[in-house]
Structures are given as structure tokens and as C-alpha cells.
Image 1 (tube, rainbow, N blue to C red):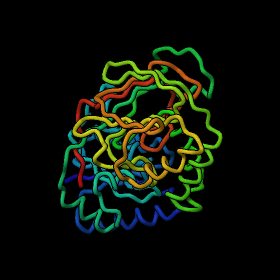
Image 2 (image 1 turned 90 degrees about the horizontal axis):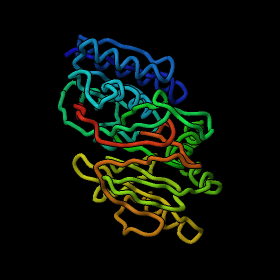
Image 3 (image 1 turned 180 degrees about the vertical axis):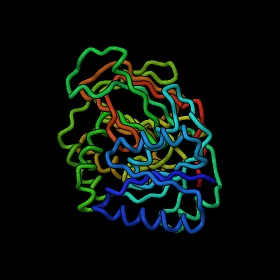
Length: 317
């Protein structure tokens, strides 16, 4: 097997670099054919992954946090939802939020994760494909075809306050007080000031209008972000999304909403928290709250459309 290890040494105040060195040393003792590539800037992970796919590696491994994992995953696909190689995707988590690994049963212990890579047991997982507009700097402007971007996600995408939550949590609070606590504090702060919006949502070809919307999550796995999770019984099933809509919040339903979102237990649909499943979703209009994020990183703006990518990803697990 020919491995390419794409390493982000910058997260967790330098601890990620030490963990990555352990990974490389452990894997080198078991496998000879290993190349390493280091991320200097965040988007490097995508470029390095794309190049490694084109160079014919058997396995391309992301060593970093969920942001690095998502960027490396994106390097496997072209803009039409097709894989650009037959490479397998491996993950060793050295970051803050391990939602990808929790979603797909990948060990968080470094030695166990390395052993998983060498066993080469794989599964095919569906990947979400999202088309959206590149960031405009916060102004609602007219757009043209060149503004459109495509990204891929393995866990979920969020429209609305999810992008604000990702920005605030990623700004450093999680490093100070921990992943789950940092995201929770950020969520409470954002909910106190966030202005909900009305959305027109096209779900499997049916147009629906929702008012007082805080966030729409379109997901493939139960783990949404930093402790926020859905019961596995409520997810979409094979090659389908679940759509979780958060709306009509008030002081009376805030605590029940938080309990539902952090407990991971099944709940009945209510006026403030509603789950349905779909094969595709489109939001065709811009709104006041128009941010889009995928797998924990803000990526662009509405309008957007979300589908299952044409090709599954072969994940080492």
C-alpha cells in the first residue's frame, strides 16, 4: 500500500504536531511506503489531497481535526460529485472536535487509529454535495454563475445560525474550556441575539415556507457538532438526509430544545424542533440570515442546493 499522510500540525496549541509525529513513527514501523505532506494554511489540505488523488496513492490519510478531515475529503471529488481516483480515505484525529470519528466508528486513540489504517478494513459511505455562493462580505448582492462553489460533507451542513456558531466556537473558546463546553457557551450567546428568518425550502421537489427559522441542519450522521446530536433512529437512512429545522424559539421551549439536542434521544416533532428525511434540498433565495457551513466550517452563502454525491467514499475504519 502506498500512503499519503496529510498532516495539520497547528491545532490544539501545538499538541497536534506531537500527536502527528507519533502517528508517522507508528505507521512507519508497520508500513514502508509512506509520504507525508504538511498543511501550512487551512486550504492546503484540500490542494494536497487533490494532488495526492491524481498521483495514484492507494490511501490518503487526514491527520488533524474535523476541519482538516473535511478539506482532505473534498480533495477526492470533482465539481460534478464524482471521485477523481480509487484511493481510500483514512483518518487520524488530532484536533478538538471528533464528530467525524464518532460518526463512523474510527478510534480516537492514536495507536488504535494507526492499527485501523494498517488493517485496511473499508466501508462505502455516502457524501453530501452542496452548491452555494462564495462569501460576499455580508452584503446581499446579485450574483452570477462564477460565484457558485461546490463542497462536500460527510456529517452535516447547516443553514442559518450554524455558521455563526462555527465561527464563534472556532475562534478559540473551545481551546480554552473544551469542545462541548465551548460550543455550548457559544450557542447560548448566539441564541440571545440571533434574528430568525423566513425560508422557502424545496424538499424533494416540494416547496415549503417556514417562518421564524433559526437553523436548518441537513445531515447524514447523528453527530451534528460538539455534543449536539440526533438519535440514530431519526436519521435519514441509506443515501438519504435528515432535515432538522429549529424555529419558533421562546423562553418556554429553550430548555426542552437544548435537552433534545444534547441528549441524543428520540423526540416527537414540535413547533420548535422538526425532523424529516429527504433525498435533496434546495433553498433558492437569499435571506437576511444566509450563511452556510458544512462539517463545522463556514463555507458560503445562500442560495444553495444539497444532494448526495454520485460516488460514495471508501473509508478505512
